[in-house]
Each structure stands twice: as C-alpha cells, then as structure tokens.
Image 1 (cartoon, rainbow, N blue to C red):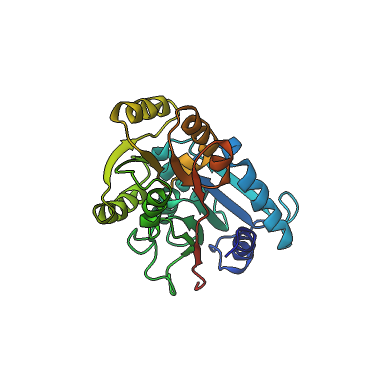
Image 2: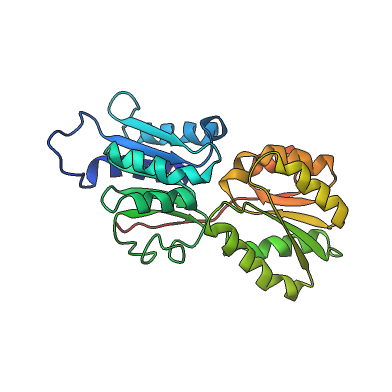
Length: 273
C-alpha cells in the first residue's frame, strides 16, 4: 500500500470505527499521533500525512483534530505518551514504528490503533495474523526484516571481496533490531561474511561508530531499519562518504548524502479490521 492510501485509511478509521462510549462526543474526530522522534525530523512524513488526510476529505483544524505526542528519541517515554492519548480519548491512534505500536497496544485494547512497522507484527505480538489482525489494531508492514539477507547479497555483488561487514543497530529499538540481526546472522555464513555489531541510540554515538569502523577495518556497513536511523539518514550518508565507508541503509536521503545503496521498503497491508 502506498503512503497516501495508508494515511487515507487512518482518516477513515477515525470516523468509522466504533468509538469509546462516553457522555459527550467531540465535535470532530481526534487522531492521536504517537512518534518516537521529534516533529522536525518528521517534516516530510507529516506533510504526506496531512496531504493524505486532505485527499480523504479531512483537514486538520476543520473537520479533524490531531493530538501529537513525540518521544524525542527517548523510547522509554512512549508508554506514558500513549497513556496520555488514551486519557485524551482520541478516536484512533497512529503509531509509527514497532516500539510506539507496542506502547499503544499496551495502553489500550479499545481505541483503534493503526501502525506502520518494519517487524513481523505476529512475532512482535501486535496482531494474531496478517489477514485477520484481530483486536483493535491493524496497519502496514514494511518487509525490511524478511529481506535483510538481500542487503548482504547486494554488498557482495558490489564488493565481491568483502568479508567483514559491520551492522549498526539501535539497542532501544525493541524487537526490530533483534529480528533484523537474526536474519543477517543466518545468511552471513553462506556468503562467507563475518558480522561486527555496533550500536547507536543518539547522535553523539555516530562519531564513536565510525571510529570503530576504521579501527576494525570493516569492508562495509549495514545500517539497520529503525526510525532513529531513518530521520538521521542524511547525516549518516554524509558521514559514510566522509569516512569512505561503503554503506547501505533505508531511503533516498541516505543515498543522496553519500551512502552507497538505499533500499525502498516493500509493504504489506493488513486489511482486516
């Protein structure tokens, strides 16, 4: 499903899904938006989000309201922020990423939740199945974990002599980095590749990461799929270019800034409600 179709789905959910019963309904539906980073790093996505709502007939401030909650890269704040949206009695919660989605699901079993994640939602405990998610949650899955071995294959095609590849993961990213690394570890021996795992959960970690790459003399870098890395993709691409590190990550800003390869995610829509 394309992003705008996904966002239109969110707008529809805000008014068509049964709402919490209470004495007075709000004049307009209220969408709760739960993000793991900061709004300035979500500029492009938020523009697309509002455009998608508009195409579906919803204009913020006119016939729909949006309550935003941003964790500012502090993932441990997400449970409290999700609880605030529940207390606000929003009509639907939009959660971007696996950790916000898990926080939203823990916070409510009644308010509808629409997510966009890059993990297996079944293994993560978000849904019962892909065709029948069940409960109060549905959304879109980016098949980044399942295609992880292809990332290694791409590097080997571009760099046939590469034998040591570093993997950058966000240790606060919930189950996503664990699933992604598991897929890489299963594929690496078949390709004759040794993996070297690095971690970063804040911008100040990036200099340490690239210093470690130089010290370990790794042949290339795989940057794991994570919202934190996504919003810093241009910065990471520029650093990869400056340090002459062949690197692969998500989305075009990384490539435009100097990364070797970017990958656009394959998405699967969970259409059952």
